[in-house]
Amino acid sequence: MDVPLTPELESLVRSKVESGGYLSAGEVVGEALRLLEERDRLRDAQLERLKREVHAGLEQLDRGESTPLNIQGTLARVRARRSGG
Image (cartoon, rainbow, N blue to C red; front, top):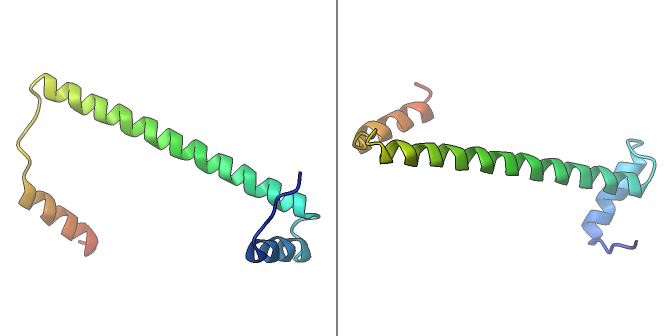
């Protein structure tokens, strides 16, 4: 399989092989694809977790287990986290 690369990506692949970290361009591309697959799996897992949390929250709302949103309190907590306190 031939895959055209931009000059920048060709240079990156070449430098990875020349550094001794990989024996061939194919190894570099293979590692990149493995990392892409891992990133996709992590993203999918995060999305599934978020869906479960949203579903649980909606079920709580349906059961009447909600409290009014305190915008000022929430903003204060966010600001405190950002400032390190």
